[in-house]
Structure formats: C-alpha cells, structure tokens
Image (cartoon, rainbow, N blue to C red; front, top):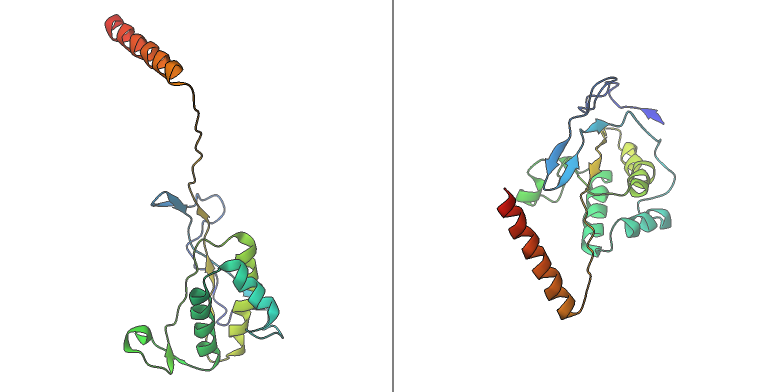
Length: 171
C-alpha cells in the first residue's frame, strides 16, 4: 500500500494499547471509535465501471438509486470536481460534497471498498484521501413461538396465578 498523502499519523480516535475503546449506544447498536486507515492500495488498473466493482456494488446493495449515487459521487471526484460542502444544496454541477459515509457494511464488503473502489480516488493528485472505519455491533433478536391447546393454556395460566397468589401471601 501507499503511505498517506500527507504523512500524518492516525488521528481517528481509536484506542491505543492498554486503553479501552469508547463504545457509544446508537438506537441499540454499539458504535466503536473511528480509526483512520493508514495506507491505501495504489490506484488499481480497473475502472469504476469494471465487472469487479459492479459485483461489489451488487453485494453492497440491491438499491439501484443508492449504487448510482455512489458511482455519480466517485465519477465527479475522479473528473476533477471542486470540493464544496454545500454542493448538494446549491446544485453546482462542477462541485462535489467532500465526504461519503457508508453504514452497516459486512467486513467483506468493507474490505472490497477499501481495496477495489476507494484507491481509485488516489488517481486524483490534487486531493488527500482519508479513510476512517469503525466497528458496529448490532443488536438483533430471536423469537420463539409455542402453541398448545386452549385447555392446556387455561390450566397453565390458572397454575401461574395460584403460584403468584401463594408468593404474595408468603411475603
């Protein structure tokens, strides 16, 4: 891989040796600290529209609008668009928002973007490319459904109520 464009060390907020990572709860997901990727592979020989990249985009999302938004952003950056944080609001065709965030990527998909897609940005020599990743632990649930006859259910409910009453009287 190539060293970072500006030679800075990592400043992604990750935990150093012996430090505990700070996890943040985000609606049931636990989010780790952002860590800066220190090296990117050299720009690959394939293009943004290669079958390899297309396969990765299909793995990432089945949403054609989402895929087009990503490829449009990459195309604008690679074509030399100026960086403008207000580009999305002003509608300037020759400028691009200078950031992109993809969320909830499986590890294999993240690795694909880091090796196949984002190094393409290094073809543009007048910009610095900084990649940050963080781990996300998502809470998912299991459910179990049991069925029984109505008579069994009523009997079980009556037993549970009797136990609850006996415990209440014991205290």
